[in-house]
Image (cartoon, one colour):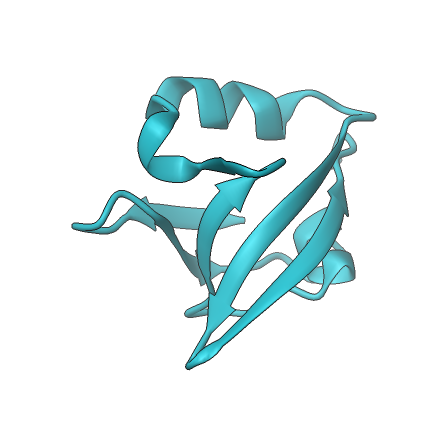
Amino acid sequence: MLWSITTTRSLKVLWLQDGSPATEAGLAPDDVIEAVDGRPVAETPPPTLREKFQQPGKTYRLTVRRGGTRLEVTLTTRRLI
């Protein structure tokens, strides 16, 4: 998953690899991740988020905004080869 930090300190999904955990969780390009496990992205330093998503075998609950809809998705990380 490739993401960028928006001006509101959320994460905008730019690109997803086919078969990746993010794709399997139902994320899509242009989704905006607003919180991870209930903690707003704005309160989490970017290096911490990067480290979280790189740890295989961890499960996170993401609050995502897609258009005008807010949804919750569960993402379980794994090592990609």
